[in-house]
Length: 193
Length: 254
Image (tube, rainbow over all chains, first blue to last red; front, top):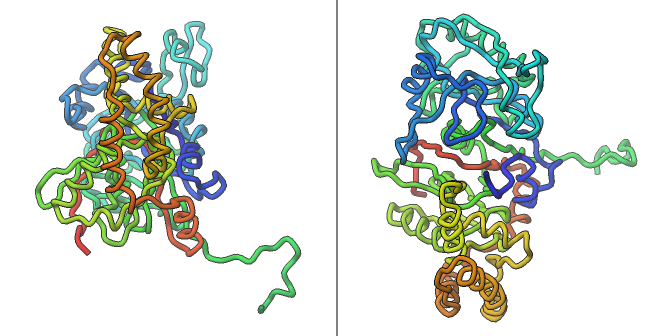
């Protein structure tokens, strides 16, 4: 719970630059999902896959040491974030954390108890009775750490990225392949319009 | 003017404008925004913060030493960037001065590079006291706030009793507004929470001392940002900060 407006709309009100003067909104997302503290998390994992993400992704709070909750990429949540922020393009981070997984799941919808496929619930109570609808993709065994050109990524990693773009409905313009600033693939520079 | 005759009535003269780019996390935090912000800062003339306060920070490594920036954009480490704290940020003068001094001991000429909006709502000591008193009262149902007064400062703004950075630059105005707001908050603190009251004179004296230190950095940030864009400069708007961590080897001296 935060008292400030954290969406892109807050840029205009909080800086004095009107909304139509904003040329591009870059949304940053991990190649999977994490969450700190309580709250709904439909794709949360409690198995070996979750441990893989936590360990490989160093998903522990920097100051508290508290483990972050980990789960699969949630395209429903991303679609919602794209809408409310008018995201122009995405930056995908920590792709290398998925290296070595045989199978990777992406949540493409939520299913209610009655079997109906739903979009984003309107409040946090709405998450209680839903379960994620997954699409499975083959993983890759090669390391993607530090890769600097998209054509050097394993074919399955490229297919995973394309699938996310298709599901979220937004292009992935930057891929971060490591913590260092040169471990980055820039497909479209936000400042080049 | 060449070509003016062929221009239609509604056509505007087009000039190469700079780009305004916003960066924000689209999940539940920890997306790795710090690195991307650092990277995009290279292409921008100015970095603007527009919301939040001195909550979570960016960890920077300067000459092997850790510095945590809670308020100031990491672009402050580069000599050709202007850093702006916009009107949407709730500003703790105490936290800001602490951060400025810490960077100065590492050779970063912060005061030259940082500009502050006079419209920033202030976080003062009574906001921190209220934040903590309330979390204590909530017990197990606590929100888990950082206890830094950010929520109460935003509340004051919405309730039309908040003090802004610009108020600090005028002693009489500030003292009169502070008197009113403390009447209210001290009533809540003592009567509702059973906590000791906040001392008016102490808050006033501390604020007036801090005001002199911040005064040279306060300017019309809206005009500043718009003029940069008109001059064809790129501007980066840095969205909410989570627990991001970056290291940088960026040059820090001009």
